[in-house]
Image (cartoon, rainbow, N blue to C red; front, side, top):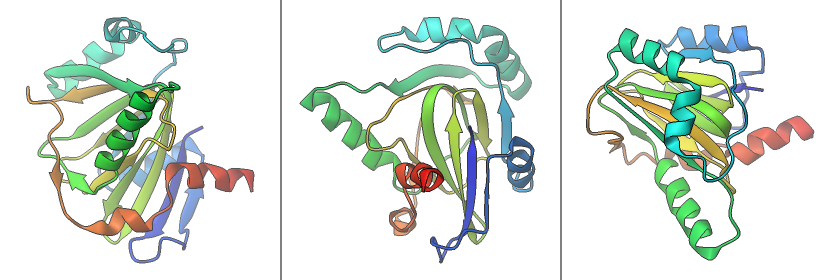
Length: 193
């Protein structure tokens, strides 16, 4: 299930809110103009599933969201674990890139069709760690500082929506804040403790 953990931006060990209640998550995010919704999950996404097949499963929702929010470009991104050095290097490089705080000139809109990942939203003087899982749709307003952790062994498939034709363009802040906060695996491990 989806998880939200809120921490002061200067005290990552202090938990202000930790919940898996979807209504509380949506309310807490809405207060910062971040949209959170759920779509039905339409089956597992196996490694090697073509992007067109993923989009076909969600065609109705994708078309409706594109029309409502004037989103021109849609693609599918993701990683599925493999047992190769090349895959481990690709995953480590991707993880390191997205773990740096950045922002975008347009909203970051993502639907998780499979797996999980964590968006860390630097909102005012707090960090909202939103662990998204299959079925979650998150829309982060343009200009919001954030970072993303796909975990040490990434497994996710996400449909990405863009207003412009450039696709993903990050403006990195240079702030090392992301290095102080618990990673995806630590957030999930806290449930097991």
